[in-house]
Length: 132
Image 1 (cartoon, rainbow, N blue to C red):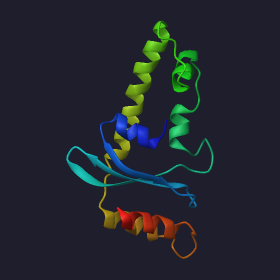
Image 2: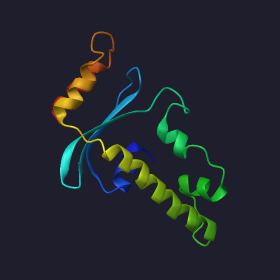
Image 3: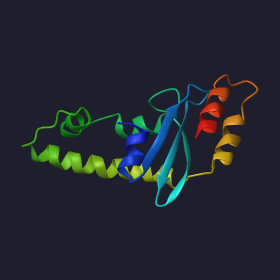
């Protein structure tokens, strides 16, 4: 699963999604959600504790949640059914948090250019945004 999957679980159509190895580990998504089309931006950090997605979904204490996340849930296991529903609900809620911050291409471009002088990935982010 991923940030893209979370936004899709929340009901967004993800037109394009890309990650960049910039200083903060940025990602951008071109989305359509509730009649609004624009850009969503997030960071995945440099470690599991810095990555909001991994922090939320990467550590499984419940065996059924772990099996579901790995795609090996047991169809007859009540725990797996509950874990699947819970996971999808949490995934959608996580995605909605990002979809509350859809910005214009111009606003996203300002963000991408903020460290252009020294961030070697800035050019790739700018080029990707221009193509959207």
